[in-house]
Length: 362
Image: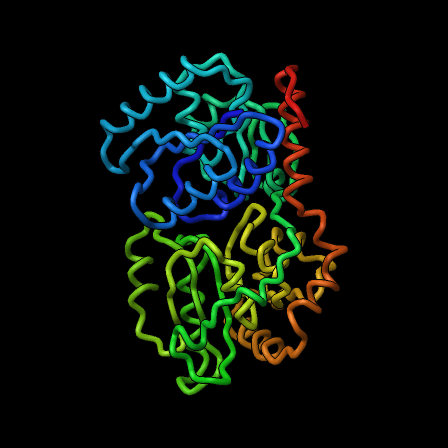
């Protein structure tokens, strides 16, 4: 099994792929090809690569450098050499660039495109070249809001339920960020892109007075939009803190009082699923994707509308929650087990088998 992804930069898709391949590798040989060059010394991508390789998964760096077109050609050559020297039964691509990249290779290997967003913005060329590729949609919303041709199925994204008590490993955000004792922490997680609506989040933080005991923390990495990245990173708000990318995100979620997503659209957001399994109360923007996955989930809230005042009112009413995360999680379990990565992996492997008519062990 060969997965192809844009790169190992911080994002929900990368975290999902790390978990998915861990379970696929228990019964199959698994490769991951990263189109963009992976940092070989430090950073989130380096740490993620080491984590993936520790599960006996082969990671191949195709060495593309964004903005340098000649390196794209180099990446194609490295990929062609890889497929020439290795017997691959199925290719699974993730995100539009990898869909396009793989179709250009002209391989006679079955290809599955996973559609991770709703909607997923793809060019006409990418759609045309992948018109015969099978599609896995990460949620019913992703299927409803995309119009791609080819054999398709819906398989929910998943996360690991490993029984870890994240309270035992939590990061003390109040101490680390020098937030006044007794404050409440609202945390948001996701790459710094317009879809995540961080400008709205900063405006929301401004709705609270300077001496408010409510502080906002953002965890996420740069994603093409330099202006947005700098506005978040260099903000002057006393109650708004940026902590960059973190691999052990559950330890940060478990130390906060409320998880908040202001996204304008999603596929099936991994960050929200991670919040579910840490037992933190969640407040999610009123979009179809959030409404569908949070239905029935204990301590999960949707504001009345997409206005700042509605979000502020919701935060104030939720933030004084005194119930422990472990207690909340125990009351959620029956509703969130459908997002188990073990089941997700089995469904992926079953679909691969249908596509290839080959022996893929489930």
